[in-house]
Image (cartoon, rainbow, N blue to C red; front, side, top):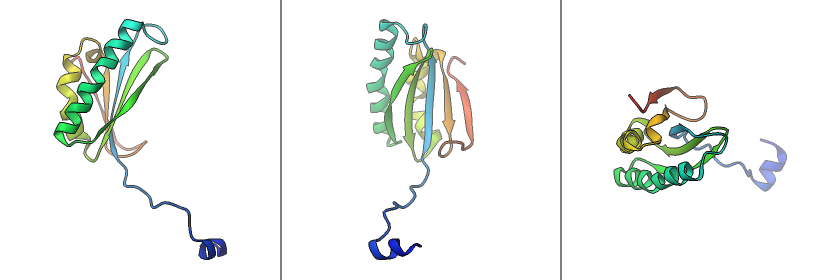
Length: 119
């Protein structure tokens, strides 16, 4: 600990336990998808969020799209429970079922498994 830290206190926040994640990548047309694709995929978000909350499995953190894919981000303490809470919605959705889910057991770089949603 430096002298400044002892005098003024440390501004470092304690490390958070790494959260598990489910990251779903759905292919879209061209770089940014069609307006219809984006609206359809955005429409699924409230259903995903509700399913996660209802199961007490974590949180829906948002999306991003570009470079030919639409990505959903979901986080919680148990990746398998989190995925189980949204799996049926993803597999039943016309566009999302063409995607792949990464079920990650910790922060970035942690062990993960890939799930092809069309299977």
